[in-house]
Length: 238
Image (cartoon, rainbow, N blue to C red):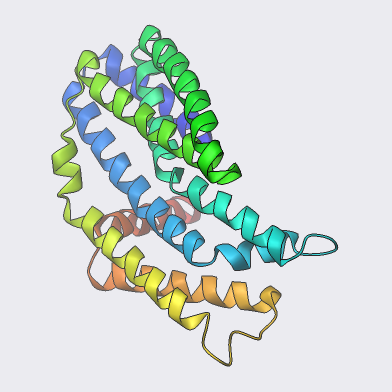
């Protein structure tokens, strides 16, 4: 929400000036940056879902059975994280272009779809089906918003983003991190450690692996973050 609040005035100004090339380039860069941030969070949450739920809730009558119930919902919810973030950015573009009608129609359609899917999937999957319905709805919402960008004269190629070296590197590195966490958390000397210590250790390990590989292979999004951080520090000291 804070990102879109900051983004909206700048995007609105570009729409007023009809700088559509700049708008297209900026959107493509932001979608890649969101992928860089949300992919490791998604894979990491799935790998550590039991530890996360145990740390937050497992006490009193909230036992291991309760943990298993909640972690299944968390897993299906987290798959939609990237699409939720994408949608926040795309909605900012529609608002900046003062194109409100599609937002309303898409929103109503997604609410109806979510309700229908929740009813159907919950019959087969219980509460996890409700979480999956939310994720599917967010995915559909993203595809609707993305397809409608042409009406705003913003032409972002989905294929170019999917084929981007940085996106593939983020995906592969996130999956590698996922596999490492799955293996390491069940190592004999780590498995008995209290979750209060185990989870921070695993999160630190995953972050070091993801950022280290991204730095080693010169992931463009990480380089952008580092350069912006350096500029911010230099401007403060100056």
